Amino acid sequence: MRRLLVDALTSDGHEAHAVGDGGALLHELARSSRFHWDSVDLVIADIQMPLCDGLRAAETIRAVRPRVPFLLITAFPDETTQRRAQTLGVVLLEKPLSVARLLEATSDAITRVGPR
Image (cartoon, rainbow, N blue to C red; front, side, top):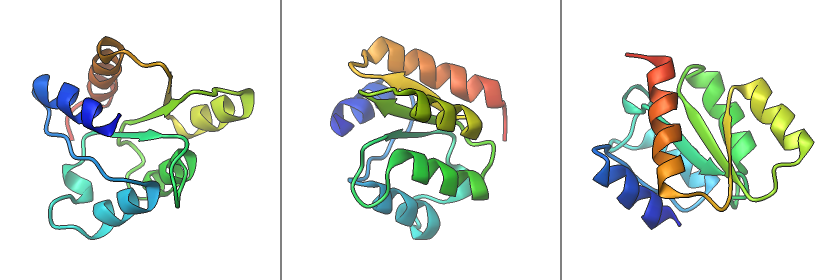
């Protein structure tokens, strides 16, 4: 799934990078020379990730970059998840997720925030 997302975003003209779990996401954003907070225009994560779930990752990222767009993918959008996502300003996308829907949500999220 990660490879498909990266390929779709790259084909649409975005620079995209993938990591294997929520812990790696936070580590890469905090410490890597490849990524740094100021260069991130959008974060896409799954709600179910090892080490740090998508909502916890969103909370952590919001503490550092409150305006960075965040798309959260889930197969089980229960009311609690929907409320937490809304509180965090996270866009919740339901699986199965088409490439067209992903690209639409990506464009909308980046446009809504505007230039850094």
